[in-house]
Image 1 (tube, rainbow, N blue to C red):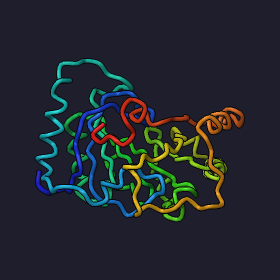
Image 2 (image 1 turned 90 degrees about the vertical axis):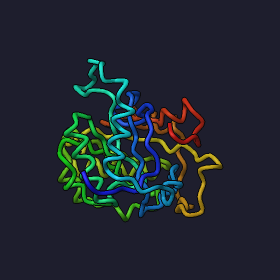
Image 3 (image 1 turned 45 degrees about the vertical axis):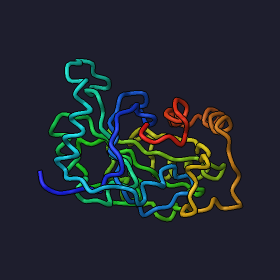
Image 4 (image 1 turned 135 degrees about the vertical axis):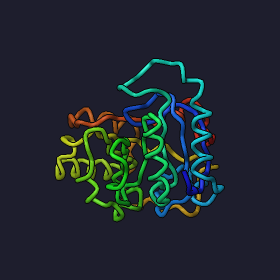
Length: 247
């Protein structure tokens, strides 16, 4: 397989989010992003990375997956470990499409975390697409590509990152307007405050007129409003220091 990617890191850990949370997962973090969300905890991936061939990336994934080779355990009908492309924004590099196709051909359950600002229609249909809809506090709400919604299926997931009361109300409106709960699982992810080492001047500022929301208040509002969503926190930030890389 020919072609290259600029890769920030590849590592084996536990999936910290989505409906696959808690499962062993190999993360392929690609370099580059054209959004600057206020809460971004991987600003280092905007520019840091090294060029690798697709063959080198596949070799590393297979090496990390090797200890699971004799395991017959499947969860959600998926063999372990999972493989996720994340970033940055993976779709900025066209060869990510080829990589995902090859990983699927190899029998992996492949996930992609994408911002929702780029066309997802060319992604192999075997890939589980976890797509953001950016809320007001991100500073990037205008970048949502709503035409992506028509390409989603029941195996995909939509994530709303909630840091303000206005985010919550906006997300509720989108669910109702687009009947999102009839398409795929919906995730409400509370914004974990950035550690000093994660803060970057490149990120957008949270608009001053927004009202912060605590994770407790978010959970209680979901319950009170009987929303058909999954509340989630980033498990890896509870297990390891929130600024630690490679987890």
